[in-house]
Length: 353
Length: 243
Image (tube, rainbow over all chains, first blue to last red; front, top):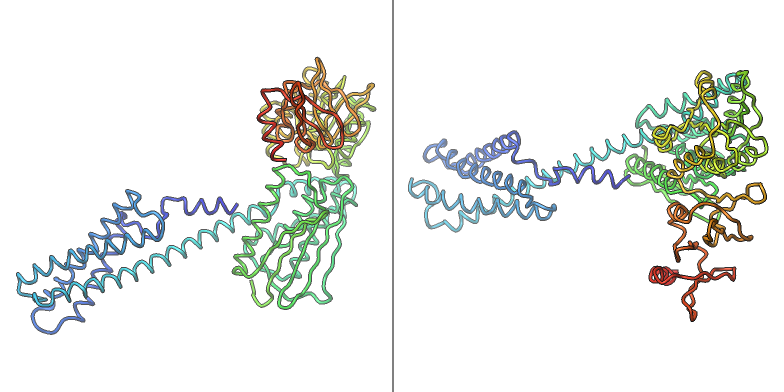
């Protein structure tokens, strides 16, 4: 799953963090920013002698020339796939800008002395160095801005995709239709049980449709119990659940349906394949500032590849959602002993999802 | 028609049973909770139709259907499933009948009414269709008229002799009629071809020794040896080295 996500984003045509300079909109916006800067510099450096507009015009010409030529070259470079990774992109962008600045400065010095305006021949060296320094600072700021922008966009995309995946994985069709079948059967023979099953199924669907909602640990445990009740109707005494909860339920909020899918996984991969069934352990402990929740099921070695992949997908999915909700502070460990498979998640209580 | 219902979930069995009873032309003769039990009841009760759930513990419905197809007078099999995308595709293309749970009464009746018991040839075609889905977990052999199931992981080797293939397992050996080529395709990731007439289990292989007349492989726990052909020798060497 994460592989796909990454490919989906970095594999798209926009793999560089620079904006698309070949795009007319971006190009115009850039020119506007350059022109505004030119005016700022002109105002700062204007000493009252001569015409302010000529001063602005001269500085604009130089800066726009740098801006235009640099954008044009970067547009071409993108088209020819020269940019490569971030480091290379940065080096190319800075070099091109400095080169264009150097060129523009030379031209303007020649032009300026012709008009008897601006810098005189004595401080040519100083002017070049000054222009290069200004260009370096500006291009660094611009690149930093582009990079941050790119990163935040990337983050949004990942988040959106993770949400989508989470939503898709929440209710397994297998579970839905089996539950429906159970309810269809019970409606006839045991209407009360059927009614209760529909209530439980509704609770689960309500939670799964309320995307990204955070709920208390207590509510999550209730959802998990609703789920287990439904599966118990189907599996009968093949399903045994052993709960170990702390005396007082810890205060903690977490994304809705974080534990339920882990229990679903445990039942799907650990109980259903066993003719005689088995026991699921659900243990919750408060350790220091963390809440540890572990869910374990009988380990079945003879599983086909499709089922292993299914398990991995569900695990990756929950890991991603935990990472999003707790900003990386929550942990998930998978472990196997001789006979059991355990998923343990550790959530810091200080963080509120 | 006599009907056998197979499903690991009691509510699912109860519902189908009730629906079958409501149809006068058919008679419910038994219920089984997994593929293994289904195979036994298919022999002893001789149903005409088996309503077979796909996902079951122990032996799943697909594998059970493949073994059932090899009976002398195989019953017709109709799969029932809640949701199983990959299998459904195969069924669609090969017209193996299936019902989606929860099953509708009219749909069940229509499926039962349309069913005729397959001939052995038809049954073996459906075995071919199903064989594309998953390798079996068991080999099914017939010993003195009854079926014997050998788990794949207990098998040391398959050895072809004329018309039959000998299956050597932890408690002895049985004969089956499956061609060695088909076994190789199905279990290629667990067995390796060492000779035109033999496939050996990778997990049971112990080593290789050279004799005056060629090379032989040896196995863990049993004294049997099998000849390695010249053509397969390099491949077998590589495997032995990586044991």
